[in-house]
Image 1 (cartoon, helix red, strand yellow):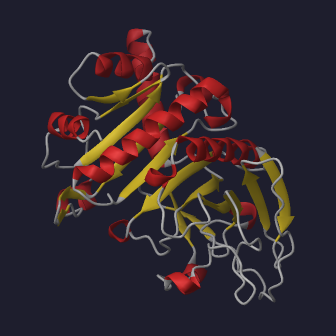
Image 2 (cartoon, one colour):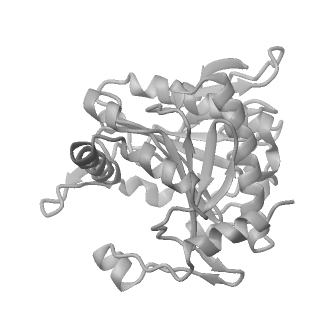
Length: 343
């Protein structure tokens, strides 16, 4: 993989990840851009002790542009975009409208392909492997920034999720705090170790591999629907080796993930005979807390709000108000349907 870094017209960083060592990319951004947006603000809820990000400048971000005005497509002679080059494989750059910026973190966009009309499910294992390498590269680099406590790589797909740009892409957030979800899971892992002497994630994985909810597995990874799934479609993907984060994966594990994940995404799109809206979220260990890194385990969680071909799950009173999820579909049924959605 060839990695090339440059700066956009307003000073933001852009990094090309190319599958050919001979690739040459346009590094000069010819646009005349305004000054970068003001920073966001962190506020702490005194009742939950959780951080809330106030990013009022994002109200003016690009929203569902026509395909010929997509800012994530390559630049052409008569139209300049966020990517100066006329082509690319995978590219990362600082978000022009970041939720977090300056001393409060960093937000990057990761484009999976220069093809506006494709999807990650259609790109195949070779491209997914390149994306894994890009995730790992950016996770390692962002973890070294002062004040960063956790790096979060994720993809939002589909208008039902709230996506504002249809070009295939994900995002990477460098957070100045440990997320509430991570803190809760770490507390459970700590309690499990104190009570049983075991590793929570190892024990969950071992139990799921013996049960009826496995969807796919290979030598290095298992994808399963969790026993207490909150969402109508929810799949967790665990590595068989306990590692804290993406940079810790070896070449064999990265290759195996690319194969399994490509197959999983294909099954997800066949589930309702159309593109599945989903959020795909990497859970990585906090970057500075040694105990937390020892307790944590890298894993990916994919979930969708679609519960039937023409029905969505909306978070209503119990979910939004109290955090108590009600799943209309048994996890065992979802796992069976995904197994049957093989090509």
